[in-house]
Length: 130
Image 1 (cartoon, rainbow, N blue to C red):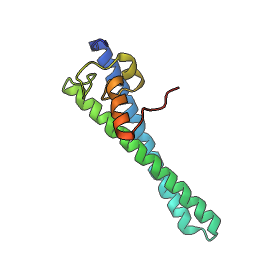
Image 2: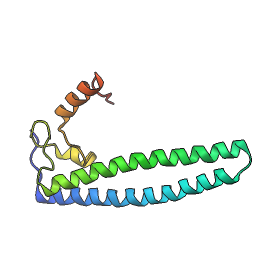
Image 3: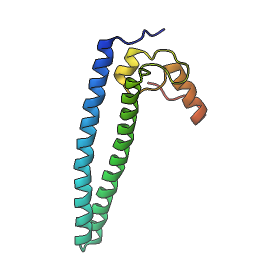
Image 4: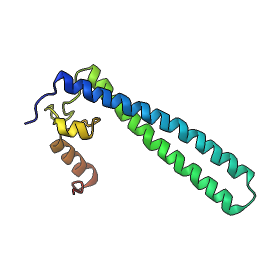
């Protein structure tokens, strides 16, 4: 059974979450600038291949931005759980989430067992493992 997190553990994980959130915000800002550049280029080129490439690059940047925004929302939710002191406890069973899991995946909402059950229920099979 996993132990509850110490104050030092919580501080470390909060710092890790905040650093990742800052990096995501910088990445999103840079990618938005690039996506706008690609869109502008697509409107200026007269070659269909160049226009297609610029459109593709803009689409890829926007897909990356969407993914990073989802991760930022997960981090905001984890920071909210830190404030309410529910961070580190499974939202399904209420048991502590292992420190190793939180170190690898600090936005985890469920313990490993409940996450497996959730994925099996949602996707009809357990997740692939290495």
